Length: 325
Image (tube, rainbow, N blue to C red; front, side, top):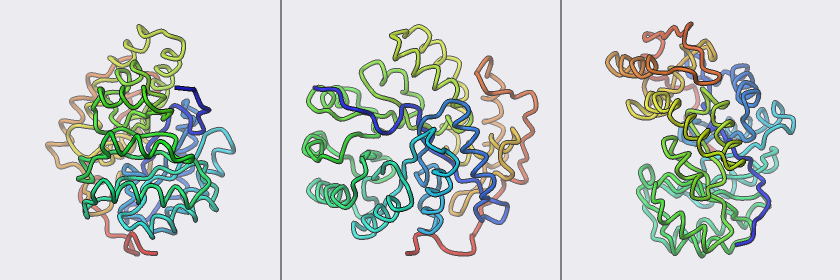
């Protein structure tokens, strides 16, 4: 299929939303963290996605995150607004407002909980894509939503002029190959452990949780793959493996990423919003055991890692409930 311009970037960070200890958004920390990610090589920032705790953010917080990210990036990275809604009307409203707030693109998650049919998914995605002029990434993550976007549905959605990409958290490489063969869609890896394998079969880039902690090695992987140097990409993949395991296997990725970022002194609190809670003692110990295996990962200096398990305990109830309009 013909190549098309990539309006999203290649190293996209699925940004955590730093909170204060009481669960309110720490806006100075948000600005600093976005700057850190861009300085480390990210050319795309996905705010208000799964990792950003979209389900417990209010709509005003989501829109402010777009505005703040746009201001900090100053054109150095694309700002993609993630999340969405399992109510089509709400999703349309949210993405229209995000476009006005300055988003460069939108990532639409498969509607969750109500388990629509494939016809329902098709209608949902088409209507949301119709409502904005921004380029769209479909977010296929059946492990969280309960419903996959089936191959035939992806082919039909690929014909929409605004739908340009898929974030794949399904891990079906044969399906990825089929879609890449038959459409112009770009694919972004949604599973940190599969970045290099998926790039090797034609994916465009990644939308990563671990990149919150270490965007630089992912920049190195992308640059190596772009240059046809799979040896260098594989070497960096192997070095990243214990960090990916620390972030993605013991507790939700958001929880682990914030715990590690706080231990590194890069955010002021590891707090998450309920029903997420910080790692329990034994979970924190497992995370730290994985971190002890890390060597020679660019941008990750664990010599001053000081985890605070007490600060991570529990979860916060914010002053205003999430998903309000």
